[in-house]
Amino acid sequence: MCGRFVITSAPAALRQLFGYVEQPNFPPRYNVAPTQPIPVVWIENDARHFRLMRWGLLPSWVKDPRGFTLLINARSETVLEKPAFKNAIRRRRGLIPADGYYEWKAIDGRKQPFFIHRADGEPLGFAAVYETWVGPNGEELDTVAIVTAAAGEDLAALHDRVPVTINPRDFERWLDCRGDEIDAMLPLLTAPRIGEFAWHPVSTRVNRVANDDEQLLLPISAEEMEAETPKLKKVARKTAVGSTDDGQGSLF
Picture: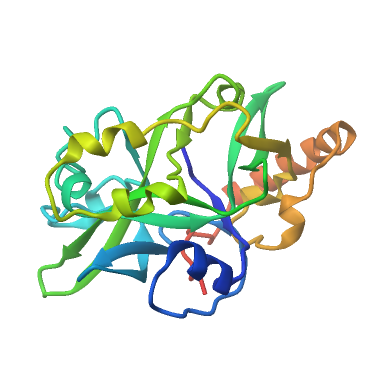
């Protein structure tokens, strides 16, 4: 799955890669979390655009979002069948610019975070589907989910699911929703090739959404991992009592 990701490339570099007409200026983000607004690239009137959408898709038929499951990921194997995604995959496909993401692996009874990124250091585009939810009073909310696939042999060592990344040569093919030729899109919904991504362990500071700094990306040693273990237990006890962190926030 994908539950946290990173955007560190310069805005101008991302605009050049994804080709949207807007010129947004934004700071790097090192710990983007669900429910936050995230950048999505989509096509309208034959032009690519940049728009912020809430990470957590709300299907148009949902009446009360407070009682609906937060859909941050859409499984590629069932995206054509699930009521929440089957219309969006045909008509509302987007790309989420990113520079990597985090995954957690159980090690000796604790969850160790890892930062995963392209081995060549280049930015990437997550495959996404989006919906505009309209509330009972006419309010509109643009929402989005990241498409995931079964992990390849190498990344499966961390987790059995990975976000689908679209190669820049396939950006136009993925974004073009004018036809209904969804079968042509299905070959794109695969895991990265073996060796395409690299990863390293990082500090458990990433567990807290409020931490959002470049230190989160730094590799840590086995000794540092061990030293963080008691600190993590203390934070867990403290957070369980009277925590006010609801995971909400602004991307910019």
